[in-house]
Length: 140
Image (cartoon, rainbow, N blue to C red; front, top):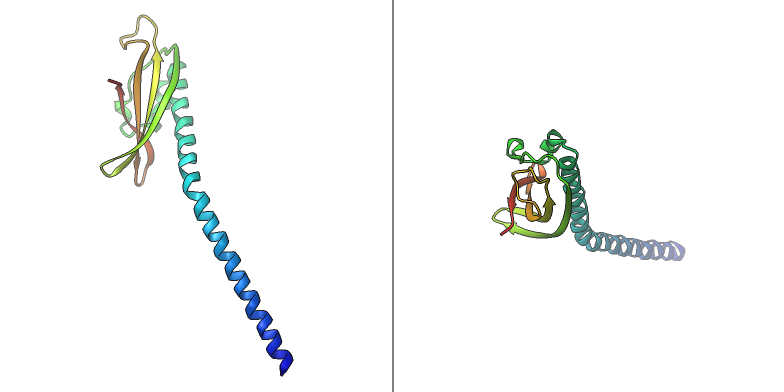
């Protein structure tokens, strides 16, 4: 009888340790996941922005339609000479989370858009669609 009580105490003490380890692991995962989520989103949107800019440089406008909320609102940019991502800003506008990428674009001389100006590519996070470009405009 005395041995069974000792074994019961050992089992109970092991379970408390297991619960403590599991709880610590869950807390660690949550603490790591919060900043990691922002980093992964920034990395994904930076890659998407670079793909859009590279497609413009290669005169491949239709390849960018998948990144736009309204594909027909995608600007008809062909023959981009050079581009540079200057900065990006994360913010909340109304019900949407947004990322704004400030990009300096250099166009050929015969292009209608002004060369050397900063443009904003604005991503919105849509509930079912994910991150899509909702706006492209010249910075003030």
